[in-house]
Image (tube, rainbow, N blue to C red):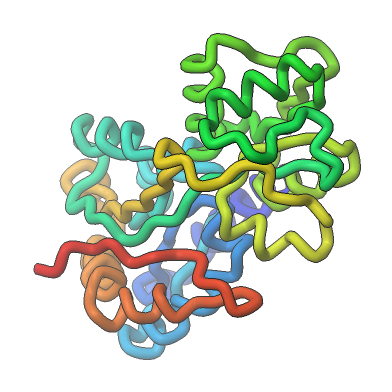
Length: 269
């Protein structure tokens, strides 16, 4: 909720900005993982210096990020839910979608691993073990890319925790990791946010490495044929830069505690 309120405040300030100032602002909606991990603070300053644009970041779940773009409230969106991204483009809300980078999802939980997930290689088996052990699971519950992937896993696994064993938080990834630590629960997270929060949560990786947990990110410009007021030139400038050699090298160079968290995947044009 706090993240969403910050996004609303940011948009309000933009609407009140003088026209000349607004022309130099590029509004980017994105998932909480790109901000919580620290990636954007590392990635965007070189682009701003080169372009003369100030990137205004609105960090929410992927569902809300795409909704902001759908309404023309931002100029460009960087998210990780490929099915939803393709639908967004097919419906005419976005153009010029390009692959940017990838990382992976992992299941984390208490170091004691009460459900005996460690050693499991299959994410669906891990989810079934959590249910069988009646261990608590904290869900993002916010229609983010992580939440959409989690719900797909439960559906494929054919099980889901019931009652008090399942809490739908409606919060960003960092906040959910803090909750999982406090409640000694499991959760699904992107690796980047987990590493950024590991020291403060003490959570351990229960499962990693399943190819089904691949997590790609894409960037999409808002369609200026649908929303005339968007900064389409600025959006395309960011898209070209983030998928260029310079942008991709910057993504690869980002480290937290010496660990690379995002891997460039843009097709060179």
